[in-house]
Image (cartoon, rainbow, N blue to C red; front, side, top):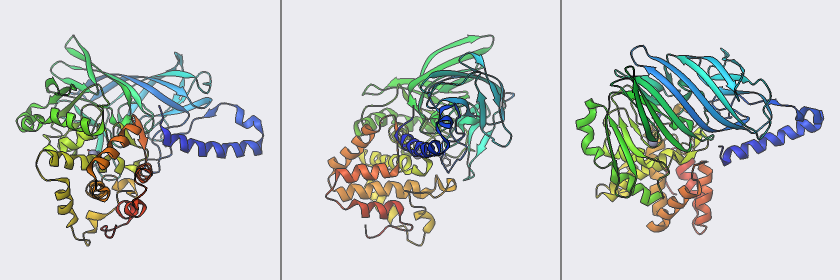
Length: 472
Ligand code: TRP
Ligand code: ZN
């Protein structure tokens, strides 16, 4: 499933193609084409592909923590959006592909050395535009973490007892073949076999477990459309607990025993957090909730994996609130391009401030004022402006979070009426369910709703002007 921003980009590409076809004659436009090797995001030029739309990933995996060996079979259901004679999936070359079929027929494939995450697939027969098709990829290898332009690691991160798996922004192809653009959302069924004593936890609900010959298979299912960077299957020794929030959201927590004591008082607040953000943003978008707390401190951050955010250690209260809020702002309404990261992080961070306010701790305005006292000369705090990080190296800069949340708190004050502001946030989420959005989409959405306010100036100061915002 591909959402609207991609549609707009595709229109531009098609307009170009039409003029070429006119010059070259209609014959050129007719035949099956080679799908683009990219979704066109300048921050990650090899990420995503063109020519098709994934509807569902079925991943059947086997992991041996001792040797680090991962063996996988990915069954990918997709629809061709162009007539295709060739197309790519994203998969790192650390994973070796042994076979590919398309609709049950053996397909030719290559993992070119100069394109480190492209799996190039040539089906036995071209795919018709609009046709559904199924790709099955068998692969194996020793997945390794990916290092990002900001120096952080992600993807498949081996731990003492398994592996901690977090994919934002480009870790997914370290362990499964996919169309790795945040705009191609799909359902996921993840099945993982591990040695007895190790638990595999993934997105969604646990369908069943089967134990045989010293190994256990865990089957997880999350059928709603989600972005590839939000999928996970983390393995290790975990204590599992389950429950249902007062508002009726089922949840499952998985906690590494080394983190259990420290996590307990924080996780006690988890049900109330899910219910609070549901009352703020609207119906919970997923089939389960919860949290996974591992012991993987070398990762250095948490991630809002769909249904069950992951923590590399026992979280503090506001980090837990931030990741749970992401289930709506980030996971349900997802950035359209990586430069739109404020759509995820500004909103999740502000949400954690609002949780603080809701529970009688510091109000969002008090947190704003404390941060706003940061001197203008502390340019590292204020830059880059949250509306445009400038490059992948600054994707998770502190300003995206702090100044990003301050932008929303300043907007709250500007609007002046809390029910109008909270209604804006609620309706923003509801208007983009299971979709994608740009920073500009939010600006336009807000300006339409409050035509009496001069928000063009407000947003240009807070989102785009370098340095400490003044005079908005
Ligand atoms: N999106 C995560 C959060 O805010 C943070 C995150 C993901 C991150 N990948 C990262 C932070 C890489 C720094 C570096 O919850
Ligand atoms: Zn976040």
